[in-house]
Amino acid sequence: MRHTKVKDLLSSTTTLHEVNAKGWVRTFRNNQFIALNDGSTINNIQCVVDFENTADEILKRITTGAAVSVTGTLVESKGAGQKYEIKVAQLEILGDSDPEKFPMQPKKHSLEFLRENAHLRVRTNAFGAIMRVRSVLSFAVHNYFQQKGFVYVNTPIITGADAEGAGEMFQVTSLPIDHLPKNEEGNIDYKKDFFGKHTNLTVSGQLEGETFAMALGQIYTFGPTFRAENSNTSRHLAEFWMIEPEVAFNDLDANMDLAEDFIQYVIKYALDHCGDDLKFLEGRLLEEEKSKPQAERSEMTLLEKLNFVLENNFKRVSYTEAIDILRDSTPNKKKKFQYIIDEWGADLQSEHERYLVEKHFKCPVILFDYPAKIKAFYMRLNEDGKTVRAMDILFPGIGEIVGGSQREERFDVLVEKMKALGIDEEELWWYLDTRRFGSAVHSGFGLGFERLVLFVTGMTNIRDVIPFPRTPGNAEF
Image 1: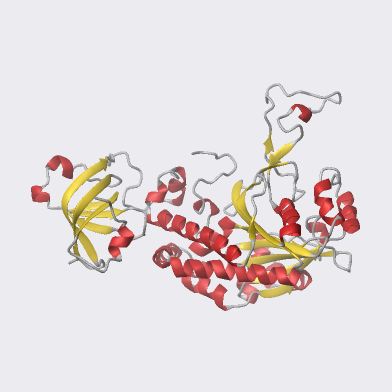
Image 2: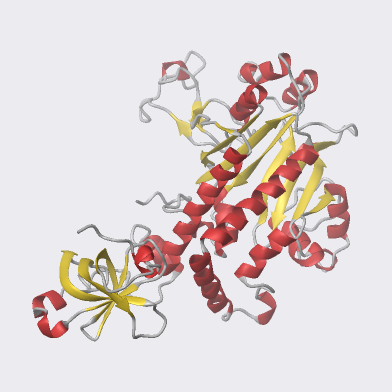
């Protein structure tokens, strides 16, 4: 008999028929009530065992974490909080779980403990919910762009280009680390390496994406990116997923419109398709906040926060206006900011971004027209010669969630900017070709997928929204 998913059993419209369910035991009470979960939903189905007619050696093996198969009749439940249950006629233990050794016992575990057991933490309610939400958001990303006629492009993971110019990259090599070949100048001879040149894991698929946008009109990438940045914080990962659309003929205003519409679409999709999981995560967040001082608690519940983003237009503010607001703010004047804002040109930190969103405007904010000196070489220079057509989207609790810009489409201006930053034109000859042959205004942005999942699930540490986090000093699993 084929088994039926727990989610489908709980939404059944008929009872008194024989069913088979397979899953993992969450709890086993009074030697007769199994709470069974198969990952299809946050909800368990209760399976009632006739313990008087079940062998003791079988009952002893029904432990938390054990995989079981139950066959019986689906009936209306007599217990509160559940619509249906299975009256078990036949039970088979598929895989035992030693209760003395299984780490995920039905009790409250710290998030740090769960990270140390990342291979098993998805068996808990919280992480099952987070990963289902992540999956739905991932589908929503593709759904949005495909409906709008974007072409999905797979940009390379191994590349010789440093899109950000930051240099914080993981090198890729097949050379023997303990015996590196040297050239006549005494430097590592990368001509003897696998690719015949210095290569690294990508920090962004943007540059390659731009070349495709200049032929296909509108494209998006959605894949892993890597930063060798030694940031051991709750907001940074060494390996994370990026969503990067690039659109020919879009200026910065159209780019901001696209980003806002996209974010609102995927959040709405999650609200429509992850109701039970989000309701559970909202309750989890409320419990967590009870331990915080009143002043540090969120003004809105998780679902209120998500709906707030849907119901409010994002506030568009120039960098210059934002600097004036921050310079005159109370925390800046009282030196409560870790990084004091005293002059135009400062690189905004998370504390500044969150102040603008959470305290001053009280809504998502799009900052635009940043100083050229603190932004990447490919961003279009404004007529004032000192700012670029860049934009960042700031969210409550997160800070920056999107970074984007109108790209510099003028060949001569782009070359001048590359020279000023010491970027080798020969290395990016192919990128410059898009400005030599049929250049046009175009724009794009990058959205860190884990930061989106962080916001939608209400989690506070980015390591808890990716299956196996990669961070400084940690590549376990």
